[in-house]
Image (cartoon, rainbow over the protein chains, first blue to last red):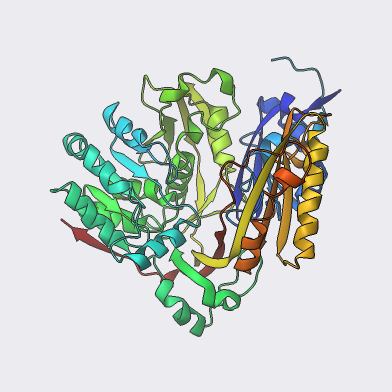
Length: 109
Length: 444
């Protein structure tokens, strides 16, 4: 079935210059394979559309049940250069929570 | 086992936090992180205006406030509050808190060595854009190396109550006391990696105890009294993340995981001056309420290069706003945006960028924002950035006229014309590690 990413994971985002990083962490370790299968670099790039000008790179942390994404040229120059309200991408993680993914079974918390 | 607490995640963090960390339970070391990427350029300007300034001015009064407590409880403080003038910072601390012994780590400031580096053939290409530093040579405002933890350990070896540094790698503040107390060697890669990861977990203050955290945030206990993070480090590199009993917030594996991933790049190659830490090697476990254990850290030999943080002047910017209300708030804001852009173009003003946001619609979430049909209110926020200060200044006079001549109801201009602000950009670059020679000076 389809569900928003927030159903099985939480996120935190930060910045390094014009690069936004988003950590995606499975609420339960057993859902990590679903993250690996569903939350690909391509789909993250598509989710942000014009907001992210560069490429998206994904790293896997199976020990934490987590993925780390680097979104390049994502912050309009970043830091003090950017003209955006969210110049440091503090909400890029929240923005990713609405991404629709296929989950194996309904999860109720 | 030693207890290391962090009471300041950035310059601007809660002033009460370090005081409470010292008062509310046992700690051995208190670290305070004041320096963000472009803070050094602000401090460099302050020093140019007054040769006695250029450090975090909140720091000396804080030490004066906790001086008697840290003496009584043998808590030692490590802070990068020195900015571009650590010695002046130390003297001001001594003036306000006489009797303390202070050790200062020097050698990170390479502002006067840039031409020497260029002559030696170091291109210092920007780590993001790959452009050589020569392209911005004339606009550099500050240049500092992210020094490692061994000079901090050396400073603690002098018996100092307070260690003041300039720029150092953020985890160094916590790794320094571990090296000092456990006599870890320069090639104890796994232990240095464990200390680096521990430093990373606490460097952003309460981000590891429930602050800025999605984990059940509405039910975070007593957030007004949130406890700042403490690492209990053992000699073998195993550590526990916790906080003082009775404080607010929460320490849980999911919360600590969020912080582990914060501002992380390649998790297998976390670059630090003292080692390369592998974040995929660790195990994170809840071992009790508000106690998270991290073990198994693996490290690899330090990189041959050390990172420089360079700040340079990069033009001017201004941001102008107006608020419109229902009905058709979005349409009104879009109309006002079109008028401002047309007028700016007709005036022949040139900018590197004009950026418009519709706050209340999609300013922060962009294409990921949920759709809204006709919101109660929308803020139009137009920013410009360019090298010509006069053009940016002219732009600041273009939004307010729309209160009378634009779409109906434009408001929220109470602060008048927006300010023109200088843009200071960050340039990260590498030089060989052996170019950076630190030394420790004791002030008492």
